[in-house]
Amino acid sequence: MSKIRSIFGYLTAFYLGLVGLSVNAQDYPRQPIKIVVPWAPGGNVDITARTIAPALSEILGQQVVVENKPGAGGFIGTLGVVRAAPDGYTLLLGSSGSIAVGPALDQKAPYDPTKDLTAIGPIHEAPMVLSVSAKGQIKNFADFTARARATNSAVSIGSAGNGSSQHLALELLALKMQLKLTHIPYKGSGPAINDAVGGQIDSILDQVIASIGHIKNGTLIAIAQSGNTRSALLPDVPTFQELGAKDVDILTFTGLFGPVGMPAAATDKLTAALKQALETTAVKERFKSLGVDIMSLDRAAFTDYVNKDFATSKAIGKAANIVINQ
Image (cartoon, rainbow, N blue to C red; front, side):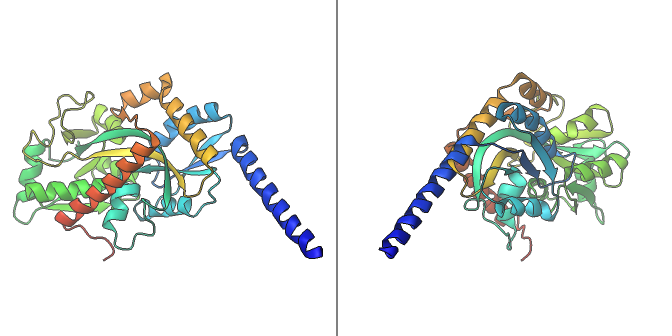
């Protein structure tokens, strides 16, 4: 009889535990939510996170805070989210660099984006822009390519870090145009842009969202951009394709992610809240001013998009012979 009572007690506790999990998921969120940005402040991903966080706070009824955890090409912050409790209170503002490119190029990547993260929803897609320091001697793409092809010469170019989407794009540009580029990796776009503005490096390849302010105030000179068409914010800047650099039309994405195993109710609520945030006037106007296109894929389609981008990054990395941590 005591054994039966023990089994009954165990089953009762197990059932109550399941009920408790269900209730907790339905009540989500009951405390502040943290969005981790795995790059330094000032770059594309940081700007994106700080644009959507206030809207999510209002919609979810809880404070949504942004925390920067840069390092190792986005791996440190991303891995922290992968290992976090899957309760919906620690999320990731993921991008092409940390989600697709870095894990595709790094032979010792500490996570697999197709298995270790939950794709909550997309945010935007953005072109890249190649800019040079206004303090330097390079003033246009012809100057850039001439110097990068000259004997005993090379052009220094900054990126958000080894394995970032910018790194992939600049290596692809060098391959397609037969250029000698000296890659200078940073811990995010912000520090790279600061050095380009200061003239410490010749050029920077970055998302338009992070560079546009410096281009508008004249401290950076935009000389080329990715994509099939010119950005409305940079109508006078030719695309790489127009300049003869075919297949260098890489666009980058951002999206919201969480650890694997999050309660379905919490994930669904976050997906719906993100979609609602992207439809607010303030967010739409902010992203329009930054030259990015809001993505409208549902969660399943976005997951497929991420997986395909990961596979494409692997293929480009192999073609350009980009290998990290071999």
